[in-house]
View 1 (tube, rainbow, N blue to C red):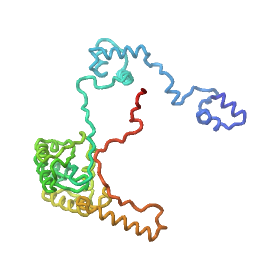
View 2: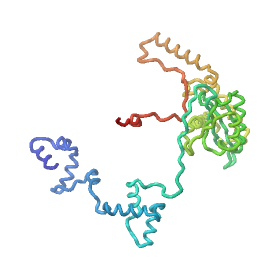
View 3: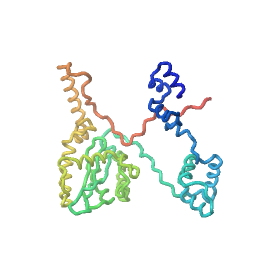
Length: 346
């Protein structure tokens, strides 16, 4: 490369364009020529291609894998195998080398009976009308007693975002959760076998009393994966709105009644006054009872009239006031071209 660059420069080319043709920088060439002699190639790619002097040979690597897979070691991880071999007076390689060789051979997995549990992604759910899909969770409300909290049970309709049920208790339990849900179910007049209730994996959600209540009412339960908050995004977003609301007290609540009084005020504001961005800025009450159809049509007509009066002020279409027809919870990942199997030749 140095000879080619020198030849180009002697013929009248500038150094930088000549280096660019060979995909090296002028600074790299200058570093190669330090001290008047051409030093070794010290680029990162070249370093990766050089074979380390202490690298295991292919024969040593195969012997290492043979030892690892012997019956006495087949169930042990490297941090157990290396000391065991040392006690037998055998040294093959360092513990990190064991891990590296196993990783390259595809054997770096749980080698004993204790394997981590696998949790499937929740089934995708869809709601195209109220009272088809509800989501619920429990959040903490601080009390004036350090280390003690009040617990807000909150149930929402995913389609309309309406809070359909809530209560504040001093403890968490499946019995209390069942009571809150039963009242909400009765108040909304939900038809049998028409509702799915999604929640996380907390003990109140999966307690026997709560599950029995759902079974009696003909409600299908759905659960998030453990420790995956994104599987229950609607309830998590509602809790953030609640705790960042301008009227949320900065100080902890003195009593459970104080907490209930404030949540009641938030409930009235959220359902009746808050224009929710996820449902085209109508209130949850308006969407839940179907009033949003007429509201959004009037908004769209208003914008069309404004555009017809002064078309020069509009460089594109008017604002989209189209109604959100359906809401998806944990939608399936879209299928890409790489995911489509190639049919075998006949």
